[in-house]
Image (cartoon, rainbow, N blue to C red):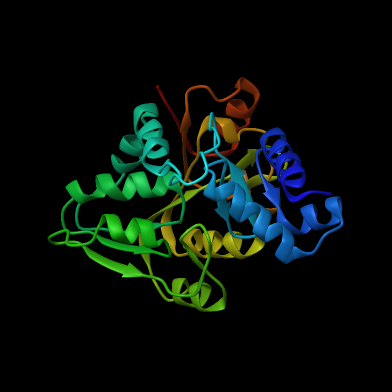
Length: 259
């Protein structure tokens, strides 16, 4: 199979499912992992997918970048959509000055980090390079970047990251969920990310999950918390009624932010 044909089919699968994993694609197309990684890199260079640890996510409403031109930078647009949806400001409203806050890796938690610049005297613990960068040179804020194995999504995972998080005490942790369902709970795209997300929640007095309403009924490969294991969920007003009812029944506080 020609590489361009395979890449087109990979993109179709990613858009249909919301995500693709390297192991699944190697089995589906009968090629090696390095071949799939090159395919995903080619799609990412054209602005069609975002690489994450172990796979990729489709970029919505994207078009191919003509040969010879730089791919468009899409992350700020995505963060802007999250801010317009009201999720990041609502999450930040839960943060009190002078507290210790944990942030997972992810575009939404990066948007939260940007807004945390306006909250004084914080200690922020995060495995996310993007989130840490947003708070760089912020007066009065101490940033602890958790080390580990760097992922393509800009976060750190692995035993070192988990061990570090088990040594800290947080007033609140904000973890972004890829998937949310009544049966599977809150899920991530891979087990290493789920382990770090789980450690963040376990280190916090208040456990907050933030997720776009489009995550409802989407199940990632690895669970980091059940519905009963979090204190607050911040999501979009478009969340389906069934999922919202399940959250209200099992989570002490559910905030559905208006767009």
